Length: 431
Image 1: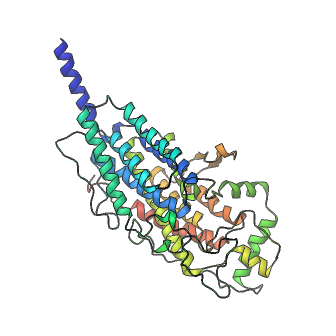
Image 2: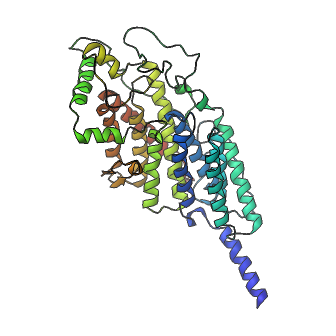
Image 3: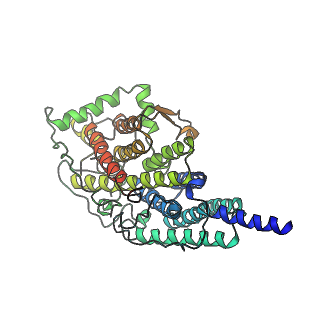
């Protein structure tokens, strides 16, 4: 009898180790991305572009670490821009996909967030160890070690892939001292003590999806001071709205401010919404990996494309134009960030995120966003993902840091980027 029980126990243990990715909950995925939302504001140099990049590569590492347990899906090697190789599994061996994902996330996050504090290193190690303890009896020792080794190898390969994109160690290059500001009439000028603009070369980075940094957006209005010019009318709207903000408009502006160094930034807000929906829908690990990967790379590409546009046109901020043509004493509700205006980064990433989430969950999805409740801000309720993107975009006009046209064109370009991500071949042909 003892022999039968032992043999049965070994059989069950092995069968558990061979469970497909869909048999596991989203817990390991949401835990690691939620941790990143805490790491972003406390890690040196994690400005919005830098944060978007980290979220993109960690999303890719998550997906690649579990895709071999997803029969209808394939690796994104050969699908993403210049992504050519990833460690292979041993087809005759078994793997535990949660432990594989866990090791991959711990490894890639430590690499991407290289300047984290000692306290945050402990948080990463603690989360990794918590999952390893939880599943230590879920498979035989060899399977566990094999899964951990695979996850680490995948993360290291993804990190090597990231090094060639132009944004490697971007946290040390936010304000390159060798950059020379463009001078002349009606071009971007510093709006604070920060004289060098943020990440002036970010638009040259390699996107995840070929073509995502190519765009057909109209040129911004010519910078003319006359009261009949389109530029003047746009600035006058920002000025008039800013002088007469309702309580609701102020609440919207502050909710979507997502300031760097204080919050998880706009790309982090995209991940925060995604994480809440993943938990609400109780997605399995396969679906969670897919959506975190899609939103991550869409957010990353949205920032590259947006920054390319910003430094192509070098449009001055509303505060600069308004103070020289309308009211020299005017001050916007929000602090103006140190880089050119056209297009809006928040609108771009929100448009891309809304497109991906709509494609995945539906175009009339009702949800509540609790992203900033812990900071004392009331939650926001939406009847679609497009609705949240529209609010995030218009919040920048209410805050006095963007013209309406920049918000609208940012949304348009972001949705295009999101659509391109949705069209990637995640699934095996015929699946």
